[in-house]
Image (cartoon, rainbow, N blue to C red; front, top):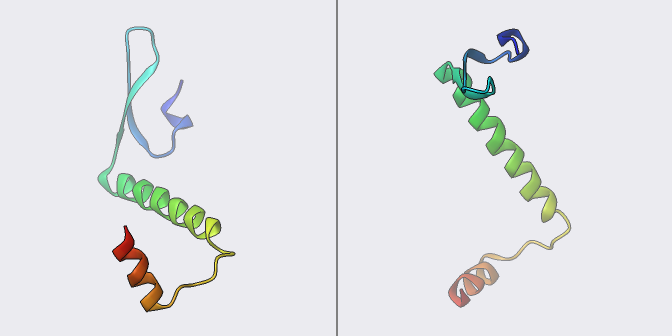
Length: 67
């Protein structure tokens, strides 16, 4: 495996069997990846509730009290 195959990786660390065990990233690239993961999660969550009817503030507060 070549580092060129991993565009964000600055260094690859291999285990005794030659498998990649760790990847070194710039902190900025790491933050970008975290944001992308969070954005994807938000997109999935929004898709799961897109057909639900929104609650009024009072309804939402009542549901929170019931939990």
